[in-house]
Length: 300
Image 1 (cartoon, rainbow, N blue to C red):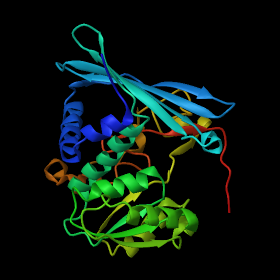
Image 2 (image 1 turned 120 degrees about the vertical axis):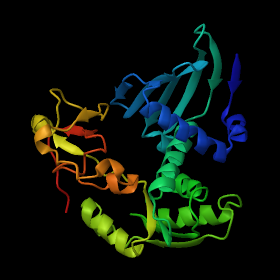
Image 3 (image 1 turned 180 degrees about the vertical axis):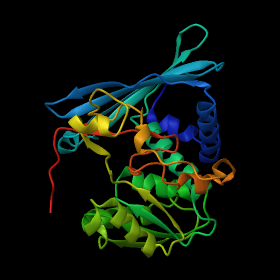
């Protein structure tokens, strides 16, 4: 049995190959060649934290994988990372444990960032004038770094809620010699975040700032909240979903018909067709992944 720590795993990663492999994984999943059962979840109150247990395999592959990833949100006060985790790799033929990958959630983070790069590769405008990064956390940095592998642009605009965190992020990028292969021009601001909790307003402002020819990445969550008692008004579901663990169909009464020639349209055009009267939660396949809450509190 092989045990690999974080530093060993980082040395083995080839970003170009990872992009190719993840693209192939998305295709296999869409073709029904991947088994991914519902997510296991543990919630902790004191101290606050959560653990996600995910598992799956590709049919006719040699292995299956179980991933355990945790987030304990008081950890930074103790001087340690909020995230941790590992992956267990087993043989599909015998069930024998073959490898333990002590990735400390790094593989999860880089998989998320590469997924964003793949989306930009196929859905971003052909001529990009700027890359907009919303937020200053882990994904803000990693997704920006991954974009250089799929777009031809060296101008970045960063928005954040906290000027100190923006300054830290910009300094970290400029001091990392291997962050960007060419000279990267960086702008940073907090000026449009007054519309943060109105996503449409925020995206319109962002679109204007990028001149309509950009790609942007979110490191801030725009959650899809629904009052628990109203869930059946929007989706085909009869139980609460407080942790966003379920992907469920949007109600037929809320769906819009497909336009003529839809299946011949480019993916970009199909993606931006309004599929329902609740487009903020409706995926391309008419499903939704939402979070039920007991009540909402408005902050002004």
